[in-house]
Amino acid sequence: MKSKPFPIKQGLPCQLKWNHSTVFLTMATTASCHRVTHDPYNTSDGKIEFHNIKTKLEAREKMLQGKWPGRGCEHCKSTEEAGGHSDRMSHLNMHGVTAPKELEQDPSAVNVTPTQLEIYFGNTCNLKCVYCNSKFSSTIDNENRVHGQFDYGFENNQGAPVRIFGKIKVNPNIQEDTNKLFVWLDQHIHELNKLMILGGEPFLQKETERMVELLERTSNPNLTLVIFSNLTVDPARVQKWLARMWKLVEQGKLYNLQVVGSLDCWGPQAEYVRSGLDLKKYTENFEFILNKTKITPSINSALMALTIPTLPDLITRMNNWSKIRQVYWSGMKAGDHMRPYLNPTIFGKDIVPLGLEQAVNIFETNGDTIKESQLNNLIGIKTECENTAPNKWDQKMLKGYLEELDRRRNSDFKKLFPEIARLLEA
Image (cartoon, rainbow, N blue to C red; front, side):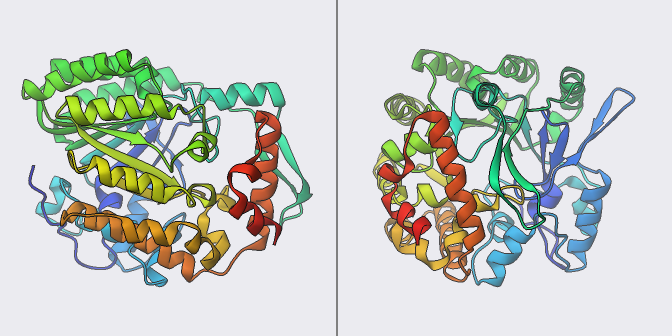
């Protein structure tokens, strides 16, 4: 599928603000990217509206005026101000992305039809990732039921206890909202060029069956289906699902199928960060996709302090896999406005020599423009770290958070991450 240049040139154009929406059914919220504040989606008259709600329309208006809309857009703003290559900049030339049809007639339109939809159906998941929470992982939710909520023994800047773990409050209308979303898909899926399914774990979620059935009874030859998976699922189960999905491509009902194997670093460090991860099973599933199918394989990594030391090991493995067939990579910083201490920038330039610089240096693009853009994104994160002052408060928060995780999981982050432990003790 050919990409089309994004037609908005004025202000601060952002593909994600106009093209993309994420729907979080567990929380009854929506967002235009993973960095911005979630807002409630609208449901009325048997319909669901998530792309043209008030806050998204206002954000688009501000960006047309050259203003950062805030509410999480500081993620790209700080990267660009530090001289780095932000997600916003990367997405302007993202392969396979097309703008909403309304922009063909009016490049200043703000009420538009999405071309990318990302769905979190529920929290069914078999892992307990360090940077995740019970809204996306039923395993973390079960852990919280055993250990209870967690309040730090010191106060934050507002003088209140810092609460990290709490009981999940699931959207009470999740089934009704799911039904409304499928009604929307019945009417609009032909206008999408990318549909992304996340979790939880899609290969374990019951909604995946319903989604595939929808794709089997419709024809969407311009649509790429993207499945984000931790690939710690029984290989026979994974292969069965992949065969069924790939058949849709062969029949011309889909343009392409992509599987993104979520993995942040390598070795026992990776299995600590993504608690429950089985690297042997992950490798078996990933190499099956790479060697035995025509499905597009890629890797998505969350970058935080713990993932940096063995990120080069993951990049090396990706380089080797790419000698068989091109393996793409995407990476984003962990940490948001609720948990900023997970962001690797809290260590400033001190984190760069622990693995980030090496990861940049060994990242092979082989002249591929997509991978060159992905490398630029990694360089942007490195640049931001180099130009950010260390944050001792957030470092203290991270230390307390990891110590509580270790208590709950009978683990010891200091043994696997001695470099980070030393920074936290400095």
